[in-house]
Image 1: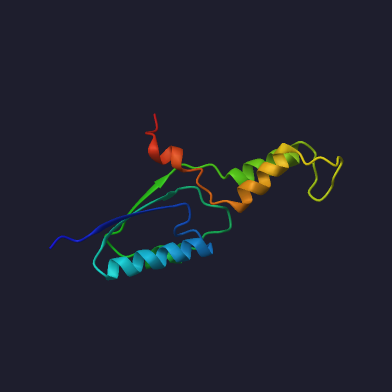
Image 2: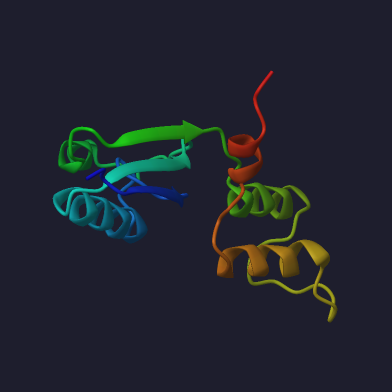
Length: 123
């Protein structure tokens, strides 16, 4: 009998130290223990200060991990807002700027900014 295959597509995966990374690692470990062939497609971009190299040791042998380029949209937008002179917590106008609205929306959603890099070959 052949082993079933599964592909995880996730932004967070070890050595990232976020809770999302720990969750994905737990799923990978559980499925590997149950005899599944596991592959992971994840972001290669890691946040500075948010890595834990010890988490790499917990990934079972045989798990294929493919890392892609990515853009951290939240950080990109935050830098843009700071460059525009809009200090956090200050309101010059009653109207909320598009940048701030976008920043809030991105912060609340799952970060999938690495998918274009994963789906299109890099030249």
